Every structure is written in C-alpha cells, then in structure tokens.
Length: 92
Image 1 (cartoon, rainbow, N blue to C red):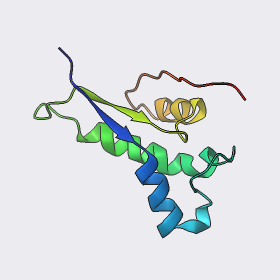
Image 2 (cartoon, one colour):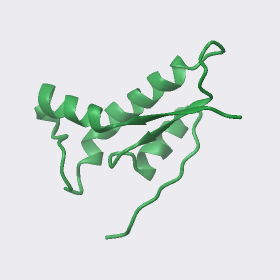
Image 3 (tube, rainbow, N blue to C red):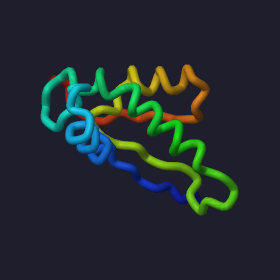
C-alpha cells in the first residue's frame, strides 16, 4: 500500500500575496496568476521532493492548486524532478 500526502499551494499563494506582493501572485480567478508563481512553485516542488527519504512514511505527495499548470510541471520535469502529473478541470 502506498501512502501519499497532500499539499495545497493555497498557502504558497497567500504567502506571496502578503509577503511579496510585487510578484503579482494573488488569490482569484485571473488567468495570469500561474506565470509569476511558477519559479516559487518549482522551488516548492523541489523542496518537497528533496524532503522525501527512507525515514519518511510517505511515498510521495499530491501537490494541488490553480497555479499548478502543465507548463510548471514541464519546467520541473526538465530540471530532473521526479514527478507524475494528472490535470483535472474544465476548459474555459
């Protein structure tokens, strides 16, 4: 049996909105939110991946949120981060 944790990026968006508003990352449904958030999201994914080791009871994490995009996943994979992706949602 695999054990997978869940990480919502809402906290990351809140942190950037409050502590670094100059980056333009904020809550809401604006379509450009993911672009300025991408470098921070990639580092978040890297830190999460690096934290997994043999002592961790989790086999991995599900990272979810509206700043997780195919472009961000492609960029993270291009940096050699171990990840698998599934995108659910609707087209607008």
